[in-house]
Length: 105
Image 1 (cartoon, rainbow, N blue to C red):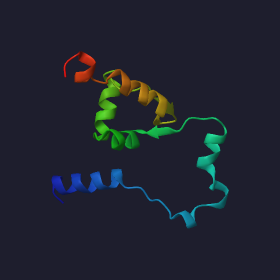
Image 2 (image 1 turned 45 degrees about the vertical axis):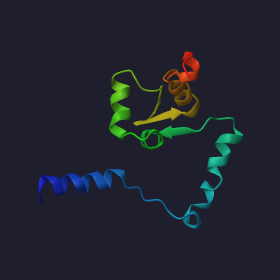
Image 3 (image 1 turned 90 degrees about the horizontal axis):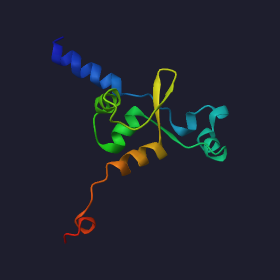
Image 4 (image 1 turned 30 degrees about the vertical axis):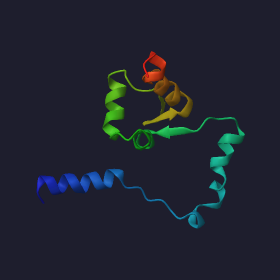
């Protein structure tokens, strides 16, 4: 197997998730997503979800974090989780002023 083939195979498996159909989920986990909202907890995004939302590679999220340029994150075990409120605040801080805000146009 060539190095390119191995890279493509590894890339496929890194992004692949086994997700059971809703009917196959374990009964004791049903309604768990709703429970976090009832408890007043904000939803958290993983690095892959944030990357997909922003339209950037996952590695960019990690690079921004190392360079201190990314949104605040929580470390939960070995995983990073991003609060939707923190992501929104981070995006607003990077919002460019439009022509109407600069007095042109």
